[in-house]
Length: 153
Ligand SMILES: Cc1cc2nc3c(=O)[nH]c(=O)nc-3n(C[C@H](O)[C@H](O)[C@H](O)COP(=O)(O)O)c2cc1C
Image (cartoon, rainbow, N blue to C red; front, side, top):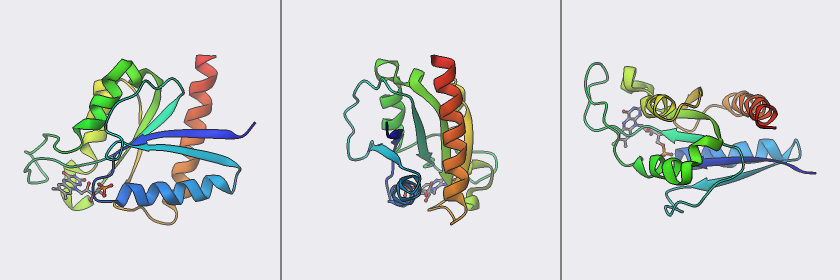
């Protein structure tokens, strides 16, 4: 049977979507199918029953990168999707992204989601990610997916 990796993500300016395309190509070389839902294009939540990993870029209101501006804007629909029908229970981890110029607020929303929903914060990458981010993150996902599936069985 073909192995499948399910992803729930949001991409507002296209960086995460671009990364998803490269991740799909990489998985395809290992006969793994990536099935990704972009909440920007599919904002109406559906019930998810298969294990999935979430990707979340960071968009915060104001903030100076040090000690203020922790409020999520624009990406809230991902949180709504995770909440819907307790979908978050099937999420085995979240991967954050952002821009390191934001210092302490780099990839912050994904860290806040990990705390809010109780799934692990797996890793992060900047903007569209580097060439080495793709296999690095693919391996983290595969490992975490296997562990989660074994625990569920
Ligand atoms: C209005 C705005 C606010 C942002 N705030 C943050 C931030 O607080 N922390 C961070 O790490 N990146 C921040 N970013 C950078 C985005 O997270 C980054 O560009 C990301 O790759 C966007 O992903 P997307 O193109 O898939 O939507 C911000 C970008 C914009 C346009």
